Image (cartoon, rainbow, N blue to C red; front, side, top):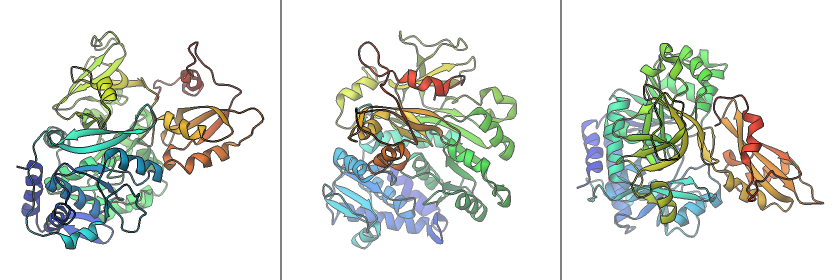
Length: 500
């Protein structure tokens, strides 16, 4: 039995003549999506000879081909490895090699690393497969996805989730928290390989249309809402801010929007007030992680009413089907309303089983009891709302993307003039946080900020490169030799209620 594939086939039959996917002038009906995903699934397991459980990477922009490949992998029992197309080639190559992906579904024109056995486009797969209903059995404990997120070592690590994780996400959260309707039109403005991708399948199985925006711009975003009467979208807070500041916004009819889900970074309370004033209480905030892809905390539409303004700085309350604890250093739960700070810990069927090929790092965050320690520090109010105040680790979130400083530092150290480097997140009105490098140069050597930024741009995704560089004689260190990043951050965050 393949329960997820059954849901997909049901949608293909029940909503056959409805539009499933929209991309520019292209329209794909549910019947066409069903046939195409059958063809791709049977081609992957037939002519290409891939067995259930084989890892298959998807490296595509937002488009119907991404969605069809996604549906096909579910039907064939193959493990999806989504790759953000904004990543630099060395980052893509690392994910492909580390995951052990045997196949890569990509644009036919792209250069493919030699480590991949099969690199094919959806168009190449379609004639190789059969249109007849196709499904291979899976169990709830079979792996479903390896989602890569940067680690403390600076190298991305893959969080492995199961079919059960996806199943409970669909029914616990999207059925009960989002209330997807058949008449919805979901606009994917963020990458399908990122948070927006979690919303494609629940909309599909409920008969809603998925509209793909391959490249984000305010003009294209607003035009798509107006033309297609978009009802739902998923944004990072930086995109919400861009929408608020867009001078041509009044020229577009955005009245069809009824739900704007935002996630990926803290939303400044003042910005949220402005957004609610402009659009009404149509917002939903979700908090989740690659290791726990089901939203763990939800700030509902009701919480976004102006009379609940005191909650605007909150990440919400536990979602259905998720156990959440905020634990002090001694392991005790923080007292609600006390102002005590603890680490957010999660438990549920949606959690990853571990990091692919990294048992030690898995044990570090899951421990013996299976509770996932997020590294996010928070307080809890009297009504159970969780307020994130800081992070244990040095994670930077810029425009909804997770950036680990160590990864950027490793690239900076490759520059011959750099003696020491520390990367921190500093406040940024547009992106939430911006990447700043603090660098000490080697004696007798010189380098400009522009040169170091260019150096990073060539080796990292654009959103990871420093936006500014400070030069110092030496970095502050503790007695045991560790760089004191808190001292570097403190001047930029002084006087702010959040330190992220």
